[in-house]
Length: 470
Image (tube, rainbow, N blue to C red; front, side, top):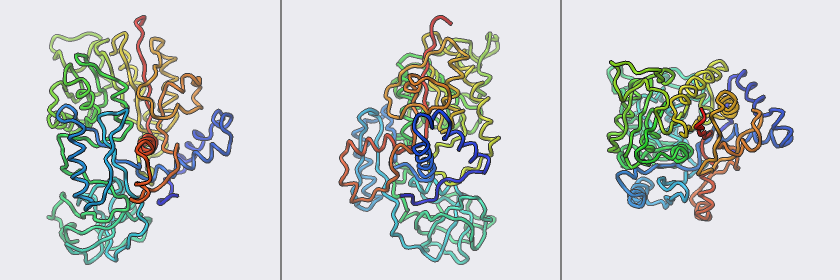
């Protein structure tokens, strides 16, 4: 049963999605009722956080068993003795899963209110405290130490510094204010640091603020799957084309035992800095990060004054390439109000194709290319696969291991055998359910793992091999 309202879209985006998820091919295969039911389920799931917190262990520095022990101690401390399991995944042996408790429906709301921005709100629903930049308004007389109820302004209508707000707001839980209203909104006041320490969040999941920073990385489950599917080998040369903030980059380097070369690119300088910081924190030396536009990363001939190791690169320079493409991000959870216009949503298609074209040319014959997005549209996923197979006869779709998501969605003209080769993580694939501490004890570990595989963000993965003939 839904705790939050279904995700809302701008009218033209709503119409676009309705056509996508009720396309003729889908209706012919599943029937109108089933198609409608799946679509409504998807809209409900997107506004709720995934049922598990997923952390990837930096196996370059520590064993999963060791980090699991440390994490159990940390959770016991944070949850004041509440017994929540930390699970190892049988197919992804470098991650740990922590069930999220909630939604908690019995929390009492306080008179003193704090309104936070939507992005801050989504972070709170996944275990974060509230930091000052995320606070938009507070009650008139809020003091440090006050018990407050925290709400998300999902439509972005609240004015900064307002003393009250009657617009659409979603309850996120209760916390203790670390600062007074005047300190938060003072012109010379703090612009960073913790504003509200959450003590009764609607969804209870651990905070990872400065928790074992060099030993674990918070990632969504499908984002971990991607690196395993690329399956980089020690000594190979790997390209991560759109790499920030470096979660997949550091994962690829760890899978290669820090032997070989991982080239990471992003065109935004501060994001490249973050990749370098993460590589340093994880003590991975095979990563080289460059601030560079991936669409311009191909050089027909190397000029004498260009550095040998950095972009642009000569054709057929890489053994494996990961293109985790910029996308419309519609698979992210939780998201209660999607703000992009239809024009913005569809603007990613040509960019993805430009990047893909460069990737194919940079890949060695016999090399592997993995394309992924964190979105749910056909046009950015299955339709891009259909376009790629038609445009590049040298590419062949490959089976994926591990394969934990569902098959691809109909409506893009792909054959059924091709749909079985791609992998679509569809949040609507299971019933939306809450988890309380009592029901958690009733689950077998296998059932929890199965639930974690399905109750994650919306995501898409396709794996190609480049034939030697072209």
